[in-house]
Length: 113
Length: 112
Image (cartoon, rainbow over all chains, first blue to last red; front, side, top):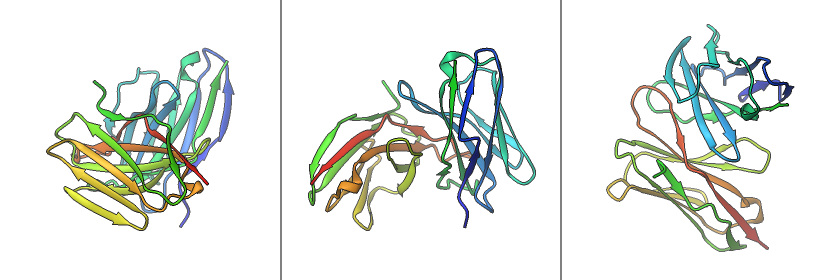
């Protein structure tokens, strides 16, 4: 069974630009959650999508948004990039029904210059 | 007070010994608890989950949960150099949705 895939793996952007990251969950999984990992703040929850609907949201500004498609693939968008957005962005896949274990993808390393 | 507290380490353990990692949490509504292992430069890998008070064993790993005292621990028996990594404790409220709240992680070093 294929794992969670994320593209691109690395990204370099400049301040003010926007970026879109993609995540394909494990086959059969309907929930995709997004997390940001930085050395200073650790792993922080951004949002979760289940059946194309945002089900949970963390404490991030509106510049961070996402969506989910009918095939459960998800995208995350960050607009007006700031230096502090440099981080490892991880998506996690789960069945989504009940309290299921989440499996992480390899992440996208975003550097904002 | 952070929602999930872990000693950052490093926890230095001789090869073959038991590594004991602790995690305390503040939200009494937490229902499910997870341990992830993260190697440097890699993404977190789920190694254990526990929902009920008591112990749960899986190979060399044992998770222990005490909801009354609000702590969860992870024991790694017969520690190997390949166990050297950062171990992240995470929890969720168990309500609809999959929001995980993570601790800062404990770095473990297993010395041959």
